[in-house]
Length: 45
Image (cartoon, rainbow, N blue to C red; front, side, top):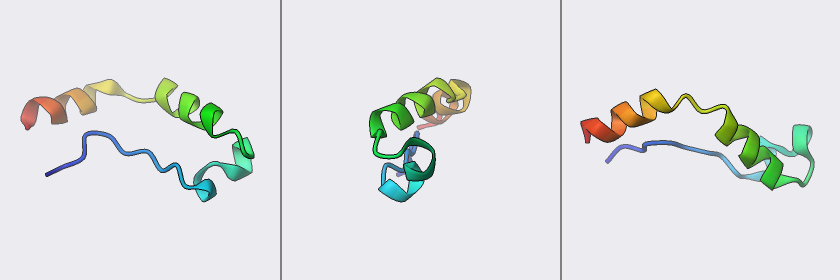
């Protein structure tokens, strides 16, 4: 089993830049994903 996409949502990952605004951190993460490698992993498995 291989992950297609990984997002660290533990507080240490976003607190310095986003404070307690986890939703903004997730939104920024999703906006910056290069989906082609994710698609390639999905197609491979």
